[in-house]
Length: 150
Image (tube, rainbow, N blue to C red; front, side, top):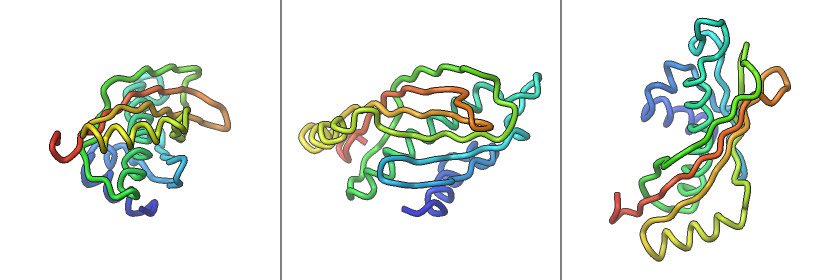
């Protein structure tokens, strides 16, 4: 899946991503990078609204899992079950969310569980950066439900 294909998919299936002007900067096997500008995500303090930052962080992690599943030819329903978001600094401009799987070996277990049981869980993370500084971090647990569980 290319960056433009993923961006089109997100804007069509997650209308909020279009309103937030989320752009797909990079799609790789090990990471997806999304970016968003300040203006449509601004709060009363002229920084990025925490809900917008969380949404972009979740979307980046979800996008990584979605593209990997799609590349593997797996059709399933993918949802977030829980997440933790830590904010280190206010975000006062355009920001990016870079997603990754902290424990790469977890992917094989995830795929095995999905094939065997029709459902599996995996943790994915995102790091938010603005102006070359880490400003926030997300840890999320996602659940994939196979076609029978979709």
